Image (cartoon, rainbow, N blue to C red; front, side, top):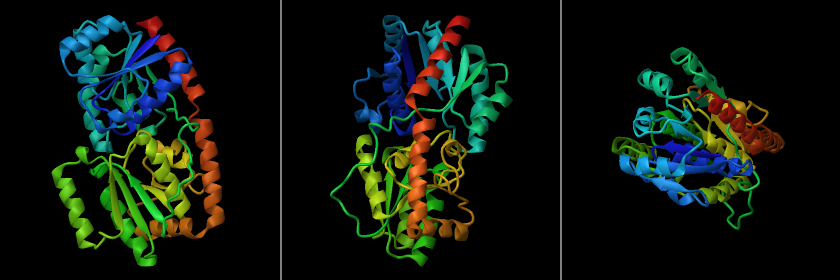
Length: 358
């Protein structure tokens, strides 16, 4: 079988997911290819997977005719559902929802996507996330839906020993400079932590190409106004495999990854940190609930209650026994929950069912 995964550009969590599942599904005899509409900073992460970057109808049409895909899965881009049908593709077509921003943004998105999904898609797929399930039940209750956990290969992305030794504990943050990732709330939390413990550093990992100029300006103004220039280091577009080194350094420093998203469909940064023995402190963004349980596999905070959130963060710094237990249990959790073999089984079953009905 051969499957084509379609997305706007190679960046962020979907780019990570595509690489992870293409590798996993190959083990099950399902050969995967990727189609992106435009270039993105994650393109250089892709290895040993056929990838096409084009938004040209004729090129896409020729690709579909030549490769004769068993199924096509389109993530987020509901307009492409109509487009691919008009280009002559008549096989199984799945619409994938991985994350649509804040609750309001997600609902608005589904209002627009609803007629396209109902008309052109054979089924919908989303990870095990309650707000995505509710969206599908509300807007497309008559469309067949599938839901199971994404996959992650802990054998190839894990803790690594580094020669770099940080002087202070490091708080890491990964995301775009946009409201849903809530960089503003994160930096407010950093300020509160600094008032209790001035010996910390902050590493923020961003894709600067995806941030608006207004958000960049707001970010720089906050840094300057709160005199964080010596505290915050911005890392832009780090190659994915190198991130294992950074997460491991954060772990060795006595720090943690802090995730402050309002809503997530999944949350690969959290999973990656856990795989590298890096403690995680996160807001309850829904998508993380599959693998992050408060005081079992990490810390869940309310960013609007800065005093309480600060106390939780300081406990990670100061309670080594608790931190070690969180790290151990988190690593075990993602290995069992996000097992690539389980993903293969679920995906294969889904494809067989859709192929029979389409």
